[in-house]
Length: 419
Ligand code: NIG
Ligand code: FE
Image (cartoon, rainbow, N blue to C red; front, side, top):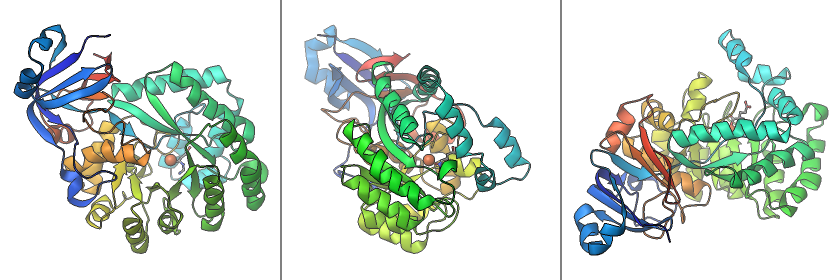
């Protein structure tokens, strides 16, 4: 038995507790379940009580003397941040492409000329497992330092059976090596690999026939994602891949309407995808279809900024009833960042989301986007004690003082992993 932990006198606790279970939109995204002078009681990694410091003191009485006490006075306490969309396992760097883009080349030009995703694929195919683990661990450390306690991770820099499995097996192995949890997604359809150039349908056949069964056989993924984009996979090819994945219990996700409007949002609604990602160019019809289907929009404002594109219409989506989550999209090309606090800032600045909506999008709704809202994403009795204590007094300050890492301490499953 480990000692109970009593975090007390937090200036503000944003519990994210609400009666709305499942993805939140509209006014439900503003309800942070705030408690002033708040307390949390944790035993064996699980939240046992949440309330004002007075309430918790009264409830636990003499037992408080045995607890490890954390005085959180002057600080905001929130759930650990959740990043529902990353490409965290990859080899190499694309710093030169960053320069090329600033000199005028576009993201798709670089990719179509064999760079971009193809360049990272070459570097990931040739990297040893040890190298990839070492590089990924450093990124996980950085996520943790920015208050993130769970991420989703995609394969997709293999695009052949061997390297797709290598990436997914690495995510599985990292369970024993790092406290941060990774929820795995198969994304063999990240691009058409160069060896299948102009034979896109054959690659789709190969992916469905050979890759999906192998991934399912080893239980290496929970979700199946595809880059549905002009010059990558058509909506028809994407639908085939996602429907085939469903046969193996893989839940669809879609990189949709990032570069050009292409019917990706509509496809996400139609196939029952848990989320559609990017959506910079999503059509009005697509947004309405997502609202109706309850598809989560996973918006990536750091990617839009990095590609010097107009951000997605987060404000409009929320107002129209689409549940919005936000994410870093951490990847070596379009968003080489591990900072969810920066992404929250950008959600406010470039998508006109309110500070409260941005926090919901980075915690509870993000947990919904990876099917984990019953375990994480809010501070409620029975949930995993994944928490962040911040060097600010309230949630507005967290979003207002931008571009700075305000993390003070982090707990994962009740263990303090950052002091
Ligand atoms: O989500 N858009 C496609 N995939 C990634 C970028 C991957 C890369 O450039 O390496 C994204 O932005
Ligand atoms: Fe992505």
